[in-house]
Image (cartoon, rainbow, N blue to C red; front, side, top):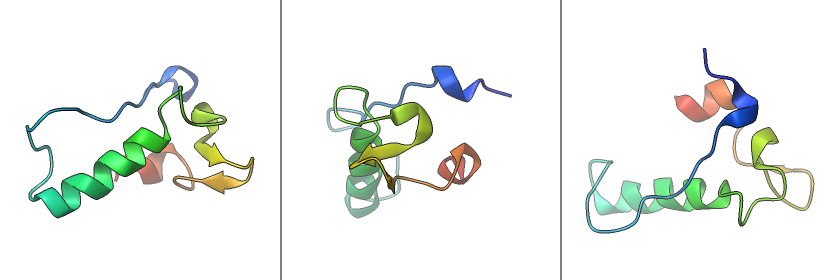
Length: 64
């Protein structure tokens, strides 16, 4: 199991798709960008803004 405290999430750049379409890729990249340590308030806790907004309930939910 990964140690969640050391996970670093960054949105991919470029034209290569990780999802099935650009519509889903866009949503995935927005989520991942919000967890970027340069943008998020507390990315290790999935907090992305304002101290209470979360990108996912927990890391298991994020990984689904």
